[in-house]
Amino acid sequence: MSCVSRKEIYKRIEEKLACKIIAYVTGDRQNAQAQLSGDVLPFFVKVLDEIGVTDHIALILYTRGGDIMAAWSVVNLIRSFCNKFTVIVPFHCHSAGTIICLGADEIIMTKQATLGPIDPSYNCPLNPVSQFLPEPYPVSVEQVNAYFQLLESKQIINEAHKARLIEQLADKIHPLVLGQVHKTNSQIKRIADRLLSLSYTDLDVRANVVSFLCSDSGSHDYTINRREARDILRLNIEKPDDPLYEMLKSLYDDFHDELQLSTPFMPISPLINGQQSHDYDLKLCILESTGQNNYCFMQKGKAVVTNNPNNPFANLPTEGCWIQE
Image (cartoon, rainbow, N blue to C red; front, side, top):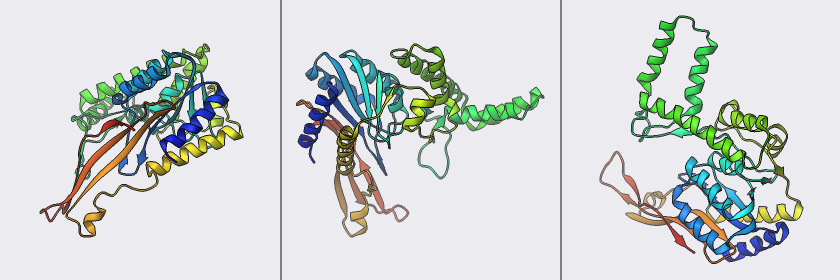
């Protein structure tokens, strides 16, 4: 199926739901993961300008996460063009993707669809480093909170002892990083509650959702299925009927094949087989509607044989860009 063929399915969904459809997919292919990022916003504007102000927009969303503020901006941008905003989740919609869902009037989830916690990770040059990793590793809100919860659970009465344990943490994680983690945690809670306030007036529901997604789930890898999102978190969840489910499944299968989500990206494979260099084009993200403004994020790169016996191959990716299809 091509972009043109997918548009036919979009049109059928538009007729069924009486809405305008936008699809946004960030691939999670092994070694070639993409994230929801602010660089997509100008292209969302182009897609929305073509649609114009309308009553109902539904966003088909597949993502493992990304930038929190980009998610916030996507919600506010789309809602400025419509009265009703729906997010359709065919499969994974985690982290920043879940934040977008919180800003929707309703969330349509297939039986295999999952949401996820929104506790963010912070990464900067001051983060801890390891001899086993090429870059500093991210520090998550969940990890820092768990450490302090551990201290509380041990009921450490001696303030000097508690101070030493906190100093040990600060020796491993720069104090500025710890401060930013705390700031980010407060920020994401505010954002989540503000997005929920657009459609949920019950303060207890909002507080429960924010608490669960930011800490009570216990792990950033935790997945929230349709039943839990509806019955436990009490979000406005809808189940697609069989015809809609089949259309969403066809769309996901096609995105899966086009972005090769199940195939690890191995740019050095041709070099192992004797080539001296290998140029590649990699499609990472898709943004589409039924209109003419349809985009994908492409990354170009080159894998080369090196003269370094300790590192005989090198992958030299270039910065990617959004292009119109």
